[in-house]
Length: 370
Ligand code: GDP
Ligand code: MG
Image (cartoon, rainbow, N blue to C red; front, side):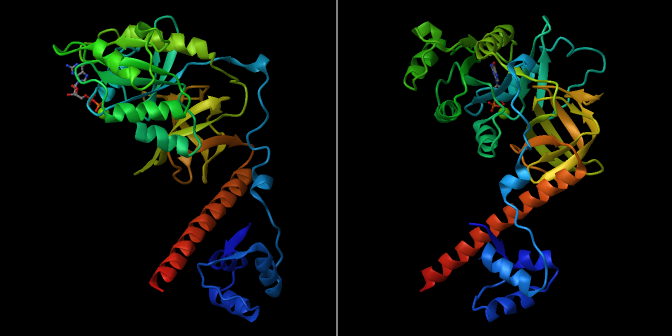
């Protein structure tokens, strides 16, 4: 049922909260400033104060926001988006850094790699792979919980000298829950105690049957430290991507997900966005979660300004009015008015939920004291 807090109602009418509470009391409704009342009661109160109103529901405001489904004829192949997961110290960060160095332009003059929330590796044959640069299943599941499904393939890093550990198992569960295919990177093959056979054996206990064990899960024996077999890992990722037949329409208003966002002194909110559909351009107006912005500048994963970003391309964006959360979806809209309408509605809905939860908390506290 639709509800509104007394505070929110008073704010929207530009009336004092105490006056609204008094009006409610006259109607026989006892409510504090933070409590919610139902929409019918709110309507009576609004009438009492002589204001006008219009009821809007989420579906009215959000209708048409995501645009139409793409036709098959508009879809073109896009790079895979990869997240690296695994137990602590098994080499996630080392592997991300080593893979970043395999970019054909990684060593060009002035090609300083900068850490934004994601990066893209350009391979020799013109193929590309996008990596989410926040390893770990906490980030993965947090993004999924907020509605973003950005990962096409999970690379599960397992140290060859350590085997399957608790967080390895957790990562397997997260990837399976998300129905995302897993490729196993057996890392630290340079170490004397490396035992890849044991890793494959242990994976069986978690319903991961590798090719060597007669299953379909690809494994690659690597060393992030010695940069061993990184090309084989990339080949495996491209092979898996081909099987997944990943495609997107670049010729539409952009949509995607917020990979990370933070407020930076002198720059305002800086967000790493991953475009999933369409092409994001400088000047575009977009909504991200409860925030909106106009793209003032786009920077690629090396900090170079770009005019646009297509599917599977991560970009840093400047121009947000507020700071969205990692995992929020973003979508380009036609006007600032539309952006404001949507974000105001979402912020309102969010405040209602918070207020309702805290009111429930207060009630529970009251009853627990009785
Ligand atoms: P994370 O916690 O999974 O991100 O792991 P890190 O990338 O921080 O690596 C943990 C430790 O393992 C560091 O001391 C790395 O230098 C080391 N390490 C990572 N990859 C390799 C490897 O391939 N071989 C060896 N010998 N050490 C590695
Ligand atoms: Mg790390």
